[in-house]
Length: 488
Image 1 (tube, rainbow, N blue to C red):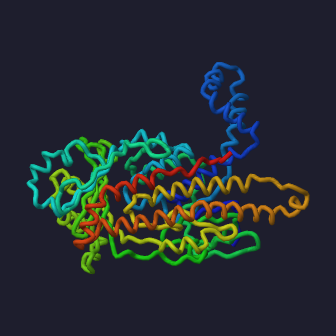
Image 2: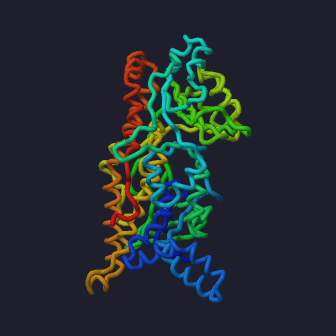
């Protein structure tokens, strides 16, 4: 079978894969010579004004052709994204997009359009359900526990009273915070919309990878072979690329998560806040996405019998309702309103953080990003956010490497070898910038989940006493900026 050559192949059309592809598509223009770059910027800014004159001019075709010529600079570095499924695959229903991810989305130009569709959350709170059982439900509702003030509020499932509340309106070291709950499908479609047609090749499952000089051969399940200068693995927790790099399969935490998304045709009464309940080994959370959609989750340690409900959404829904504890009726209504096809079950997995310290995040012209790189538990809400950061940093490092020109005749004569060295250096730079960020997020997420979801008296006591500190960690880890597509 014929071998098809591609400059950059990205495996996996998830958040990390599409962010990387869009970063390369957009960011390469920023490494053009300054005169060319500023010419492009001038035309983009004046495009609307020029178009007005075009329709009044007798040289419409010439002017439009000239604008198209200038717009070619936006094409940047083309990549091919391989997706094993038949269409755009969405795992989960929504994710919390924290401040750090919004900065990264702004860097690739899709942040503002997404902000217009989702409400900014005003805070976070914890509520202990263990103590909530002792309260009169009317008292809790009278305290505006849910009511119409839905900030990040953490509650213990033991008491039901908020053990800690943190406002998202506080200012971090790098600026104002911005936290919103975004539907995954909408995020992926927003990224895909900005990519050239044909960027994704569907029904393309990678079965093996082999070396061929300076290039890599990617073998697909249909028998076709791709030859590429750069191979990026964004293929999730079961990554074939991560396996090739020597990473072990992510470990199971013995915890599982039920997730769902409820749609209220006539709108809901919740304020844009994040409420979380915990206690007796169970943690749940409820986050409004916008005026009509509420995302929820419940994490727990399942018995062997409970694991059997993985493929039965009816049992998932019943289990969630029976394990929420004595929460207000408004909370239960969210789960009750959730359609069965909007509920999912997943066993939580993570990569041991020390693997990131001595493992190969990149090797020669191959690297990993997203869940293929740093799968983590959802307790920080940073899995998808870190994947977006990866995409921006990787696109920046690759664009810089591929944009460099030979310095002398010797390098010109060995174009392929020199380009390989530049790519290798660029990926090593990416790995260096992301290694400790991934280590930090995996470690913090695991420890927070362990403490919050514990059932022992000692850990319950520590959790309630440290609730404000634990909640503060979420904002601290979100107070991060991965940078722009160009560092110049």
